[in-house]
Every structure is written in structure tokens, then in C-alpha cells.
Length: 65
Image (cartoon, rainbow, N blue to C red; front, side, top):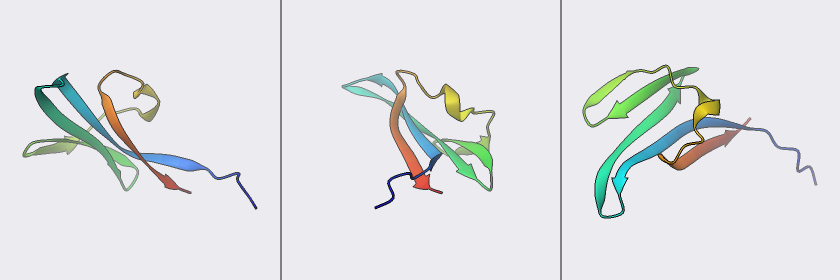
């Protein structure tokens, strides 16, 4: 059994606020470019995948490459 899988980060859901309320945004990769999704606003992002280690990262999405 080969367990040497490699994964690529493709999306991050972020939460800003408290346990009782707040706001969600997302950073998603499409065709090797990052985009920010914030309510109705979608725009290219300067998001850097290795900078996700923050208290705002809520869910991380990976695909196996």
C-alpha cells in the first residue's frame, strides 16, 4: 500500500467574529489562481497558501495530486 500521497490546498473557508455570530469568506483556487469570495463579491486574490495558519482559517480543502 502506497501512503506517499501529495495534496494541494485548493480552498480555505475563513470565519471572522465570535461563536455567536460573524462572517464567512472563502479563498478558492481556479486554474492556478486564487480568488476571494465575500458575499456577492468575487475577485482575484493575492492569497498565499502557506500563510493560512491563522485564527481565521475555519475549513481547509485539499485535493490529491
